[in-house]
Length: 232
Ligand SMILES: [Zn+2]
Image (cartoon, rainbow, N blue to C red; front, side, top):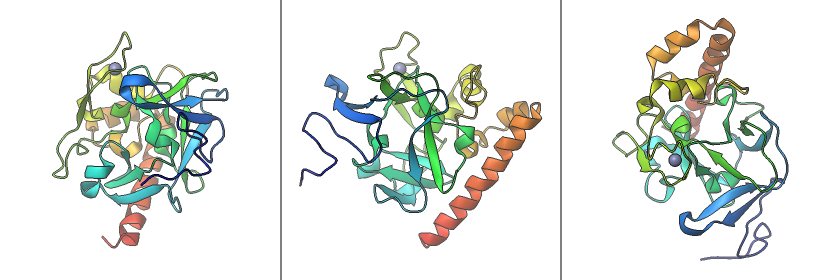
């Protein structure tokens, strides 16, 4: 069943409630999300609404397979946010040299989680994120197995086989937590929390560690509320 909706301006592109991005087909790998405006590091590109978002289906992680597979993100502990085709996140491809993603450990701001530019983005550039930085050790199967994906990003530093954050080499894990350039905390706090050796490293940076632990508590609280709301 397919209907033309106001957000779908033609068959070769798709628009959203958010200005500044457009989805377009890009050949063999399907569609991608592209910037139509310039974004500076830290600028939100879109947000994910935790309270009321008709474009997102919220469910426990073990149910987020089948139709939802590879279109969902475990944004707070054990809860998957499954994006519909009306949400720009649906079109965000992985790249091993990504330009966007979460910031401040996935901190919730006024009921929404911003998805932001990690560096300068010019109009026409594809918006990409590093899927490893948004994947828990249990996102691969309903039984809680690890996730992996063959990467076709074509970047010179392509990792070829993409895994969850837990299975990355230390330099890639650190690049997600405390990159040389702002913004920091590109990995949601609850995903970092699976890695005690990384939490130990963070403790040496009191300001960063405080922000991380504060956000971890926040995401755990949101998860509890959502579990109640879903009757789990
Ligand atoms: Zn790659």
